[in-house]
Length: 183
Picture (spheres, rainbow, N blue to C red):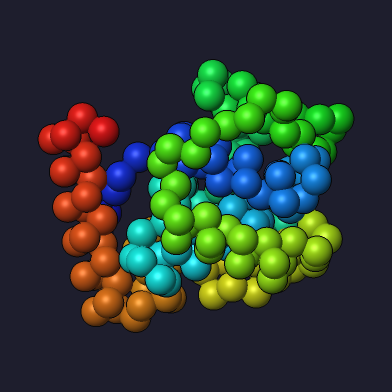
């Protein structure tokens, strides 16, 4: 099912989720760990609510599953003033929360709670164990480069073939509704 429309990457929710995870971790975290925690949160949100938090694009890479947009933000390949206001790259492999407090406007209470659950379960793991864990997920494609994880493939692993089609249709409807409402 190529050419499915999905809602676009949500920079506001992604930034809010990152701020929450960084706060819980004392303000500094390795970029690899952050990306893995956000991936696991998106995956769990798909399981629970049939839609992710970030609507980022997922890839398999040598160190496991990643969120492409977040990786680009951390590596300064993409620049969003909102992200830069609250988060910065720190040293070579870390991200740091800046001191400005952020008003949470887009994340729901349920999404906040899910991020806390993910952090409570995986937040004390080191980045390498998190990488190994995401490599064991069924959607991971063993690679030494960057391989796209199709949303359809991820949904099939979570919901089975029939359930994946239903969720794909819901996500496509949401994408068109967001366009119609200019969101």
